[in-house]
Amino acid sequence: MIQPNQVYGILGGVAALASAAVWALGSILFRKIGEEVTPFGMNLCKGIIGLFYLSVVIILSGFQTVSTSTFLLLGASGILGITLGDTLFFKALIYLGPRLTVLLETMGSVFTVILAVVFLRERFSLVVWCGLFLTVTGVTWVLWDGSEIKKADKNWHNGIKYALLSALCMSLGIIFAKKVIESTSALQANFIRFLGGTIGIITWGLITKNFRSSLQPFTNPRLLKFTLLTVFVVIFGGFWLFLVALKYVDASIATILNSTTPLFILPMAVVFLKEKISFQAVIGAIIAVCGVILIFLK
Image (cartoon, rainbow, N blue to C red; front, side, top):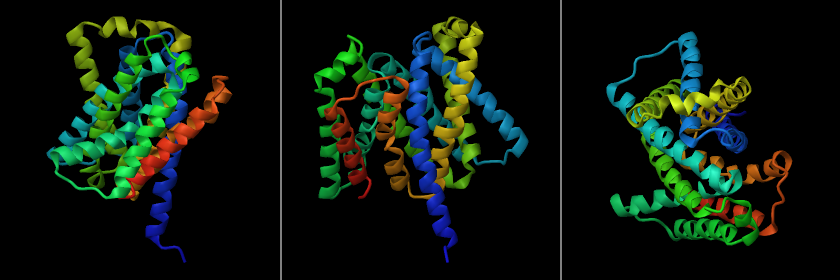
């Protein structure tokens, strides 16, 4: 007989894998939007629309009181992961395209290990260091594939910079969220993160006076409808499902399964973007994902 804990474990695992697949699809959809909108504009519109979606659901389901510390940590997680991480991610998408950007996001696990060693004085096993080596090797191997770089923008080096900074911000955001996710529902945690992230985006837009001009392209009904659909898919797929996974399984397991996004995006790039993927790119992605798995098997 299957025990309740086993059911929750299966639910968390499925949620993490589904989140990975949705993130792969979302990266492709946002890349399409990025052909007409700036990265900041994409993140600003995504934040406003996403907050609206979540507000409706929260009103219907009810909002439970959370402690001040929980609210602040989730808000800070949103600023790191959404205000900064997503804006940088969208910038990288413009230069590198979905496949290379998503692959570089696997470096987030490498950053987590390094930060833990430097600031927390943690010690890791040989297996973890082998995983770190494999992840870096897989990513580097793909980037060294000349055919892959030729598909990217001529300023591809900027894309690599933005993708790595995005991975760092998102990694920090996940750590903040994990500290308090067990004390509230996945939906409510997602709402608070989005609230913090959207407030951060709006504040930055007002300070830089880019708020109105960034939203101007969305006066196009076609673009607005496409963005509404894309944000819906990402909000209730990528973000929410990963928080569900964090709630029911260990952060290491959830992160391992969620890190399979580079594998999901390979067939999607072939189907939706009509890309030709080199054998080296496939092997590199597999090596990088295997490295992430070893890191979180610590």
